[in-house]
Image 1: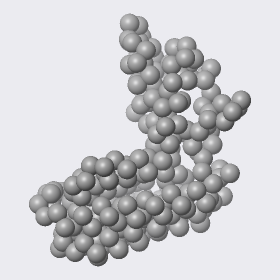
Image 2 (image 1 turned 120 degrees about the vertical axis):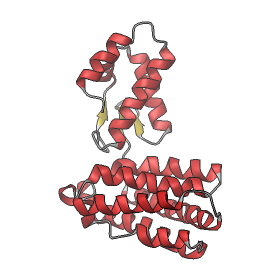
Image 3 (image 1 turned 90 degrees about the vertical axis):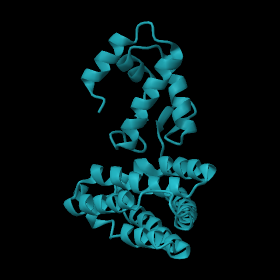
Image 4 (image 1 turned 60 degrees about the vertical axis):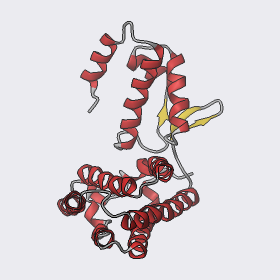
Amino acid sequence: MFGQAWGMAWRRSAVGVSKRTRVDMIREVLAERIVEGKMRPGEGLDEVGLAAEFGVSRTPIREVLRQLESLGLAFSRPHRGAIVARLSARQVSETFTVLAELEAVCARLCAQNEGTFDEADFRAASEACAQAAKSGQILVYYNCDDRFHGLIHSGAGNGFLRETVIGIRRRLVPFRYALAPAGDPSLIFEDGHPPITEAILRHDGEAAATAMRDHVLSVRDAVLDRQPRFPFD
């Protein structure tokens, strides 16, 4: 979304913009690059290069990198600069395991909370994921997947749980884009959403939790099975 033309336009509009606003804008651009897989785990975040790209001093760039680190998207190395977040295989496994349990809680609560979302909307989100996976549209798939899970997070009716899960998903999202061989998510994601969808719509909390847990753990296993594709420590 943010290409070279956008960067030039941003620099022209940056005159008179406050430091706080500049930091926010740069953070959003870099975060988007990371979560869309345009910047991969382990890739360097060079202060000088970023300052030149965005037409600012290194001071706001340092603040941006601190914020990205607090979001789990970057990691600062003493005397060597920051890189896009890179987790060890063990850390990836542990993080996915925690996510699986919290996503399962969301699914259970969502199933128990009747009338929290539009059922047709929910079915449409699940079907959109299936179609994107079948056609190998990996970016579309991940957008659909975020919407599907987002409906469940909101349907759970617990704001703290929702924010916690979103934070963990954000920490793991850079790894998703290196997952699918030849960019085809259908080779990895077996139809995991329909069982979750059906369990939630029939208000079966335990079945929804089990299906969600199995789904997230299958993604974890896919990540770990493809370790060579990731710059794990």
